[in-house]
Length: 509
Image 1 (tube, rainbow, N blue to C red):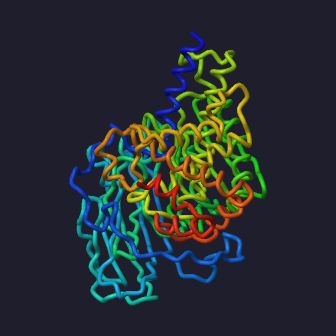
Image 2 (cartoon, helix red, strand yellow):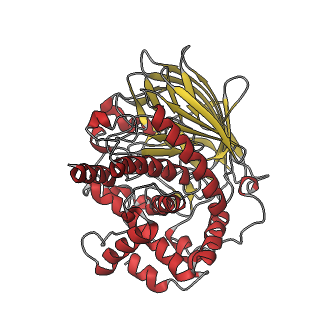
Image 3 (cartoon, rainbow, N blue to C red):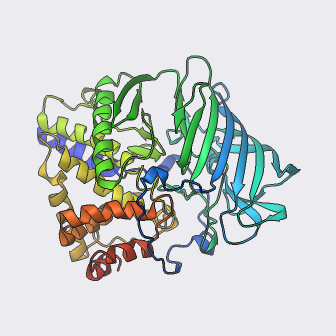
C-alpha cells in the first residue's frame, strides 16, 4: 500500500507540475480557428544581435526611459462578482513608426461562457471619444483620429465593468476567494512584425506584454484582505514599477505570515486550515529568492506575495509580478483526508516536494517572464522551460529528505536527455509549436516543453562547465532584462558562449 500511495502521488505531481498552464476543461476554447499570420509559430524573425550587458543592477536598467503608465481605481463587489474599473493609461509610442491605431487585449472576454467578460461604458483618447472595435476574439483595435508619432504619449481613459467567472482559475472566484489576474485592458505589443494580434489561448499563459508602471487603488468590503502586485502604499493603494502586469487576490478568509529575506518583504496568504503548508511556502519562498538572486541577478522588487489559492484542477501555480498563486492538490494539511499517511517518510517527501517545486517554479518566473520577457503564446518554452530547470536547481540546493533520487537535477534531466536522443514519443517534443498548436493536442503532452527545455539547459551546463554556465546565465538575464528574447536571440546569445550547434540541432529539429 505504501508503494501504491507513492505511485499515486508521483502521478499526481507529474500532471500537476505543468507549472502555470491554466485553463483546462473549465474554460471553453474561444475559437478553434487559427490566429492571424503574425501570431503563427514558425514565422521567421529578423536576426537579433544580443546587446552587451550593462553594469547597472537589473532594477536600474530602465532609468530615464519612458514606459506606459497605468492609474486604476478598482472596486470589488463580491455580491455581484464584479469589478468596477476606472482606468487611465498614458500610452507611450516607443516604436519607430507613427501609429494610426492601438490594439488592446480584453482577456476576461475569453471567459464569457463561464460568466466572465468586460462591459465598456466609456472610452476617450486625448480627451475625445474613442471606440474599441472587436477584431480577433479577445483582441480589439482603437482607431486614432490623429496618428501618434514616435516618442509621443496619448492619455486613454476607460470606464468598464469586469465580470468574474465562477471557476477555479487564475481569473475566477470560488466561495469567498477571488483570483483576479489579467483583468486589465492592456495594449498589445508592437514588435518587429508589427502589432502582435494574439487572441487568448486556453492552454498555457497566453500573455505577451510590455513593461509598465502601475498605480492601483483596490476597494474591497470590510473584512477582506487584498494581496496585489507591487508595494502597498499608506493609503492602501498599490504601486508597481517596471512590471509586465498587475494582478490581485482578495478574500475575507485569509490569514497571513510575514517575514523578510535580503531586504525583501515576503507575505504568505492562506486559509482553510493551511498552517503547515503556509509555513513551508514561506520557508521555500525565502530560500528561492536568495538562491535565484545569486544565480540570475538580484530580485528587482521590494515585495513578494505568495497566495495559497485554488486554481484550475491540475495546475499548481500561476505567476504575476511580485505575486504568485499556488494551489497544490496535495498539501501538508490535507494528506490524511486524501488517504495519504504523513507518517510514511516517502509519501511526506513527495507532498513536500510538490509544494517546494510549485513555489520555486513560480518565483523563478519573476526572472523568466518578469524580467526576461518573451512571447508566451508563440514560444512558451522560453520561460516555462527555464523555470522548470530552476525547480531542479532549487531541489539540488535544498533537497527534500527521503525524496527519490529521480528528482535530482542530474538523474532526472539526464533521463530526459536519453528520451531526446532516442527520439521516441516522449522525446519528440516540438519546441516551435505555439499555444494555438498545443491546445489542439493532448493537454498532458504540453508538459513536454518544460522538461525538454530543462534538459537542454542541463546539457549546456555540462558542456560549458558549471562555473562558466552560471556566469553566462546571469549575463543572459542582464542582456535581455525588461525586453524580449526570441528563439533566435536565445540561440545567438548561447552560441556566443560556446558552440551549441550540435545540441541545438538535436533539440530544435
